[in-house]
Length: 126
Image (cartoon, rainbow, N blue to C red; front, side):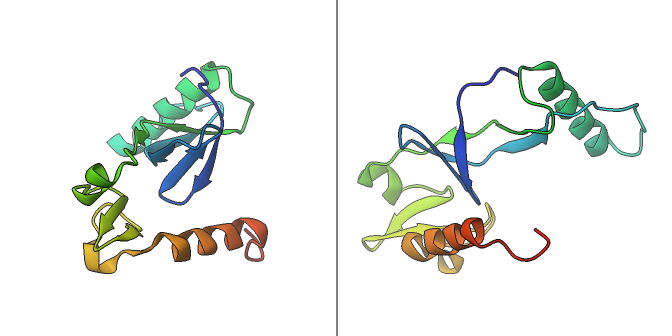
């Protein structure tokens, strides 16, 4: 893994310094991976991601986002989007999860207000 830039994580969206949006992909922490535990395939895969981030040029403990897909921001692409950000009936909407239906999506304004509120005033213990 090689650093390509910084992003601001907004839940299911990542925003970079050039105002490009991405759908959140996978994340790992840049930590020593520890020994294999062979508990499950998914646990070993996460350990391998931590190892790759640790070997990369990331600060120890830093969260590393990877496999993030860029979001096309033109109206035609958003109208046919099945991703996190989409346009329906002239409303820009966000799905909270990849499996959420259009009906479960929320307006982008409400979504960003909620995410910004959590960043500015995180819940106690977060």
